Amino acid sequence: MNSHTKILERALHLHVPARAATAAAMLMLAAGASAQCAATDVYAAPYSATTGDLPMGAATGDLNNDGFIDVVTANNFGHSASILYGNGDGTLQAAIDIDAVEPGSIETVGVLQAGIADFNGDGWNDIALGVQSPDLGNVGIGILINDGAGGFSGPPTYYAFSTQLRGLEIADMTGDGELDIIYANRDDDTLNIVPGFGDGTFDDEIFIDFPGGPVGVALADYNNDGHLDVAAPMVFSNEILIAIGDSNGNLTELNRFSADGPEGIAVGDINGDGFEDLAIPFLNGDSVEYFLGNGDGTFGAKQTINTGASSLPIAIALGDANHDGFDDIHAGLFIANAVQVLLSNGDGTFQAGENFPVGARPRHFTFGDLDGNGNDDLVAANGATSGTVTVLLNACTGAEPCLADTNGDGMVSPADFSAWVAQFNSNGPLCDQNNDGMCSPADFSAWVANYNAGCN
Image (cartoon, rainbow, N blue to C red):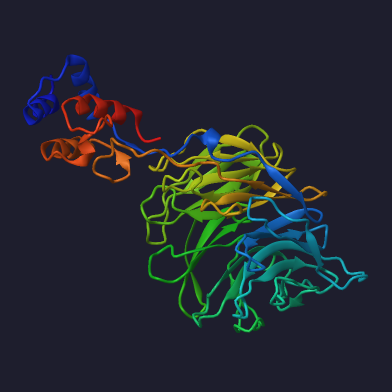
């Protein structure tokens, strides 16, 4: 009999059977974070809707102010943006395509990125598109202003010009309270900021040199100074760049660290320490790589997870699929036509991946609550020539109360042992582990069973 069992006997004035004593000894050595649902249960069966040809990007937001989340896709071969208004139940209405150039024009336009925000402050969300066209002088950012009734007409108004636009994010980068657009320009080795005036128009863009071929943008406060910073995958130099922002639109390189063939990037908190972490897809390595943030703009060593032979992960996103407070990896498998979900264990490691089918050639992921139940659903832009967008509704309904978590920290751990003893001695409500309405010695065995079962 170990010392913990003797303490329990003295505290409860009862004899602990040998079997229970063994369990008590084992549980004092173990600790685990709660898991809200199994990996196989996080998403429901896929729902797909038709878009313009070869959607490369997608964004979610309420465009017509009906309280339902809508979807916009950026269609590379379709030379258009598709607007799919949400029905509020996870389904989408038929796509409305907005041409990126005047109808009948001979210009070739590829629409690669999409974003949704209210650029003119009228309370209606507008649309930003990342567009490329050698015929139009390498157009960069196109803006579609909402007509005030949830409708849009094209073509967009163009404000920025680039040669190889990758990634598009919307935030106040210049500190004037107005929304700006930031994107990566691979061929010019720059991160470009397009300052917004707040009336739906934009100023000349700011070019900031960062050699190495930036192909994406992930915005977050990486050094916890209160200003947005940028993490950018550098495809030519095989690095991730961290550039620190200030309140005036300046970006200053802080550091770089090695990453293999980064073609995209996602930011989130994988291990629940409050610091931003990063994940990238390694297309040619059939794997994803992730880096745990230290909270000062630096990151821990690269960690790699294999996604399966010939899986070709190309899309990447971080989001809490199972509602346990830790962000999970979502990797788009280009050949398998699936999203592989890797649930975080909360300690910087991950469970085995679970594949969920989406459409052909997933290229981009975003999240939004399309069925209005308070949980983020996954939206995949599927980059096959015949375009579709796939919605995976989050099916993780949460957990029953975790009775063994008697100290209420969201985990079952050895600390709950002392907390339960305190509940017993004070006849507290959490003493009742077998739901018989009483606090009695029988609740010790029930607590051991609840502990071993964990939170599910």
